[in-house]
Structures are given as C-alpha cells and as structure tokens.
Image 1 (cartoon, helix red, strand yellow):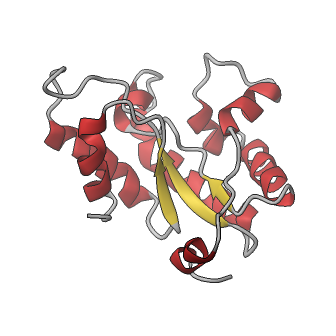
Image 2 (cartoon, one colour):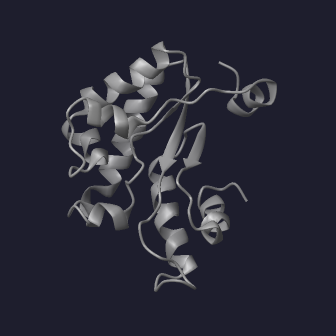
Length: 162
C-alpha cells in the first residue's frame, strides 16, 4: 500500500460509513457506550470494519468516536480510556490489514469550551492529545462532528498536524 498522503494526493479516498449506526443495527442500544465494545465485544466491532473493507472502503475509522475522558466519564468508564482507544486502534488495523488505511476517530467532548463554557482551550487540547497519543501510528485522524470551530486549532495541534 502506498503511503497515505501519497494515495490522497493521487485520488479521492473513500471512507467507511457510520459505525455507530451499524452497531445499533446489530442490536446495540443507544444507551450503551459504543466505544466500550472495543473491550467487551471486539469481534462485533471487527466484523463491521471488515464489512466496510469488503465493500471497498479505502479508510476505516476506529470505533473511538466518543472515547475521550469527558464522554467516557458519563458512563463511568474514564478509567478505561487508554484500553478502549488502544484496542480500537488494534481492531481497526487488524481488520484493514493492507487493504485499507486506518484513521483514528475523535468525536466532540460533549462540553462547552471557553468562551462559551468553563473548560479552557488548553484543557480541551489536553483531552484530544491524550486520545491521539493512545492511537499513535495510524494513517490519519478524523475529528468528526466538530461543532465548535474555535477548538479546531487545538485538535490539530493535539495530533501533531500544526
């Protein structure tokens, strides 16, 4: 497989679909932490990644959309942060093999960041950096559902883009 940026320079790369929607279709209810499935039902997560690769996806996202300290705390799972992210990266890498690139999915924190909230930009950056460090070595990172554009520079800095 070509290096990711070289492939991206040459053509449009097709990403996978909505992993959460697929998990829901497989019977996982919305009141569950989908990210924790990396630890509790890794075969189910791998099955979804493999289906996207078979369907022709060039890029598979890790099942880590909500796997940040703030979001996991709402489920009482913040102590499993590292394990969830590391396992999410392992599952996606294994499913992709040499047929697809792997991107680390990083969703919103679910809190307001200054000046609209109490969380400072440096603290928000720290949350994203923590996640990125746990998924080192992936081809890319996808910061999905970015509602607060003022967080964009911090997100890019946290994964070493800027």
